[in-house]
Image (cartoon, rainbow, N blue to C red; front, side, top):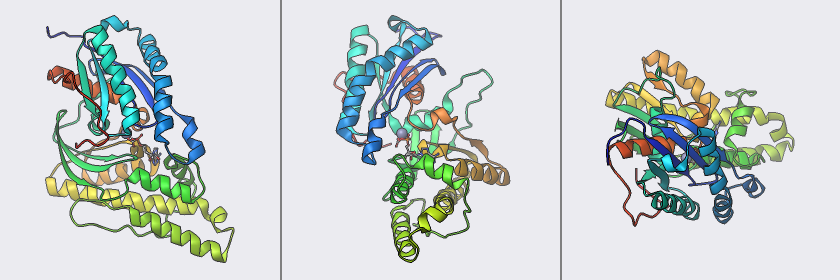
Length: 342
Ligand code: KG4
Ligand code: ZN
């Protein structure tokens, strides 16, 4: 295969409840299409079987829409990148099978992407010539619905995991708290919104601190549960009266825990190029506090654009671009995996 200046990659994401497709020209996004799945709201969480079926329904129209918006003919694609894991197996298999079939039909390479690496690589998208690449090594805090990871990014293909959650992920903690407070799924964005109207110092929720750079969030959820149970016994209107203050105080506890480990990691490694990634990186409280800490500590801070925080296929496309350049193509017998180490 000849090296080309203009590489066109189709990215496909189907690891959870978003069916997404992107077209990238090198590291620039030409189209980024996402179809959400409202059906899960009725169940208070993602129902795997329903997610797989919705992916099956959405995938062809979503890919078609991405090609149309990018004004790219499928015959001009150079490769197909897809999420191979981690995620819901049935959901992943829809994207994997589609990507394999398309790459085989077009006789172009297939690129298997690790979803968690892709969240980080969203920082390597350059939509304009003015966009600078992050300085490496970079320290990244990836906070999503299923993972909380602290990692050193040595290159777009080299990652070192230095800390992670031992139980619930940060996004999961947000979602579980929202559920306890009677809010629909996914609760993270709703807590974020409520928190902006509340007093974060009104209540105190303890976060267990683990040694080293690991996180634990399951105790936080339990403390909220007991807190509400005790207060509601005395005042049935308690939750309604203090919803925004509870959301703000709970959010502060998560942010404090995340930031204290991020600061510790920066001090221990000496790395001052800092990034956040994943769905929870859309949280306005986290983004604001990080700006403050960053200024004080002289960090080079990278916060993703909102469209690249939660699951999307642009991040799969950029990860595919770097794999393509390194000629790290997927083997023909590639399959998806629900669990996949970083
Ligand atoms: O990265 P992501 O889209 O999917 C996974 O890979 O898991 O992350 C989804 C998570 C959900 O838990 C959702 O509640 C959380 O990100 N999230 C937020 C916000 N937006 C999404 N959490 C807090 N504040 C937000 N603004
Ligand atoms: Zn994700």
